[in-house]
Length: 496
Image (cartoon, rainbow, N blue to C red):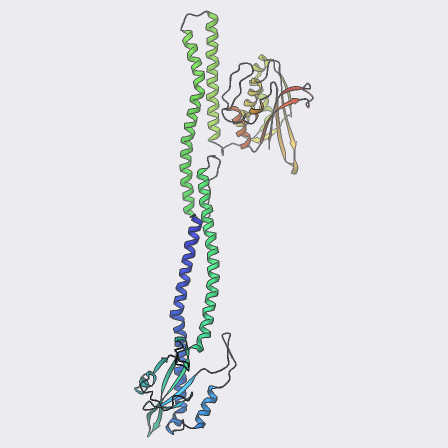
């Protein structure tokens, strides 16, 4: 089960338990409280009526038709009251009166007159000077119990009459009210509670879903960050979630250590593999030089050792450059410099090699082409590209270097650098791999391979400067300063 489902399920369970507790509290507290209010009202009414009927009880007028008619008119009085959205149109009360012995002398329902109620709690307690109250279940005409909701609450009050300047207890009046008459108010409160609880449940579950999704999404971000190997990935940051930020920071620290360890292992393995071949060649040539050889052979082996030593030095330099580049992806130093002059400076470094191979170097460079970039790394790009172009160019081949500004939409300017070398095409299978680290092709003349690091550095530098690089085989006939139908390889770079 996913964490999203778990959080949502347990949050929903807590909400449902809370709502059940509210419902239980309602049944245990609200209903009794409503009945307490009703009891309070009945107690007041009973005492008022006791005062009003005292004279009639003393003069024995409660058994007359006139008294009964007066009471019946009062109880059957029509009401037009809208109480808390409940329309009340009649009085739901009944009255009975007992004498000082507890014998019923008047009953508004006309069924208990003459019965002995002296043992009923309301009469029994009131006759003894206490608060009298009782609740009696209701029965239908067949004697079936109608349940506690149909019970009747009776509140009694003593009837006193002043005789010889003394208050004499002459009877008890009891007022009864069916509990079902207050049920509409209780039911309305229950319905309102259920509706509100339903809304609260839906909103709470929705909010729980949002929280659960946010947690799941945040944890997924940390997980994906931990799984990703690319060092350019940014550590995820979460607002108002310090714990998740601490987890992400811990993952970042762990990942950096693991990446550093993996990088060192990969670096050492690669360097060991690349160094093995030239070291073997140097060792073999050195062992042969120990023997008594003709001078020409000695010169040949010495030249071979020099070439392999140069290859080792080039490999180490490129590996150090690649390490520096990969460990400083967010630390390039932007400065304004003249790219046209930088290209000319690099060409001056290769002047002897160009002259030795009798390369025809053709330049189409826009003067004073200024740009904002890291001068050191752009210089490494130009060095690697020109070095590659010269290595794959035959003697007396043509080398074309073009540099121009190009205008785009919204007045943005791009700098476009093109380097074309006349020579053999890159095999089709290799076109998609030339920028891969450690991939190289044999040079046409020496058949030796390079470290395969130079073009990888070029691509990474261009991407860090938000530029684009493309390498392609062309049958060059679109540049006027090159003779038509010259076959070669062109590298095109666009930099902002």
